[in-house]
Length: 111
Ligand SMILES: [Zn+2]
Image (cartoon, rainbow, N blue to C red; front, side):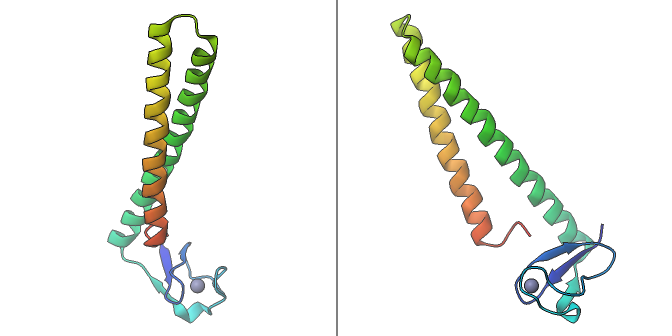
C-alpha cells in the first residue's frame, strides 16, 4: 500500500492518496509527500518488529506470572530457585525491550 509522510509532524498515512488533513497535526494535504517503495517497506518491517516486541513482552509477562505461582507454592527449594531465575530473566528482558521500544518511538522510527 502507498504511504504518505506528513512533512510537518512525521505522521505516516496508508492509502492511495494523501489525507485532506493530517490527523495528528492538522497540516493540509499538500504537506504530504509520497514515500518511496523502499521507505514504505522499511516502515512495514519496523511495524512488524514492533509488534513482535510487544508479543514477546506479553509472553514474558506470562512467564513472570507462572514463576510467581511456583515461588509462592514453595514445594522444593531447587524448583523455587528455577522459578526465581525465570522470573528475574523475564523481568530483565521486559525492561530491555521496553527501553528499546521507547528509543524507537523517540526517533520517530515507527511511523
Ligand atoms: Zn502532521
